[in-house]
View (cartoon, rainbow, N blue to C red):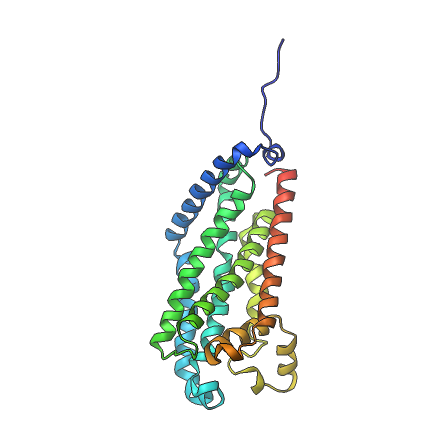
Amino acid sequence: MNTAPATVTALDADRMPLSAAPASFAAFRALTARSLRACARTPSLLYSPLFMSAFFLIVYEAQLSTVVSATTPGGRYIDVVLPLCLLTTAFTGGATAGQLLVRDIGSGYHARLWLTPVGRWTLIAAPVLAGILILTVQAGALTALGLLLGLSPVSGLPALLALVCATVLLGTGFQLLTAAVALHTGNGSAIGSVTLIFFPLSFFTATFVPRDQLDGWMAYAADINPLTPPLEAMRGLLTSPWSEQNLLSGTLVTAGILAAGAVAARLALIRRTRTGV
């Protein structure tokens, strides 16, 4: 009796038994390492977000510190401008996962991976994790530059660690959003549109001065801007002791961005699994 050879479809792979889990985790490690190597070979992914933010940090501190330092907490303008540059790094560096996915989709490598009997989650989790690790290094390096420029947080080293963690959490949300766009479109230009949505928002908040220094329509724009709460929370980490921190609003917005990214990535993965590569 002739029987047709069994094939594993993308939809069937998600129904693999638990015995396939070790293979999925092994593939996850290998794909994450591959994504990190791709970042190391691509200066635009590894260095561009860091260099751009470092450039603006140095210029803003040099040109604006003498003008507005009298209105900033403690008189140190670096406490105002470093969180802004870290926020910028979060959503410019957040495109890493999307760019890695687009590259693999365009080369056909992603289609070949789709035929392997590993969990579909590995195909999106690996570039996202690589992007998170790169962003952590970028945020740490930018914070170290801030220390060289005179940064001295009231709460010491724990505040610096919390600042880097906040940057990475925000960036993780952007990583997931760009990964969702990459899976949905497979287009590099569409990835850039995610950054273009958030970049202008950073100029309609308390960009160069504390929120209480704004008035008129700019104060109203800052009030409704979703980036204002995390930006102000990050600034508070540097200027206030732990007993006076007000992190609730910033934490809720960050959690919202993370949740939106996770849902978008999950839906894009389900759609691509059902429709094929």
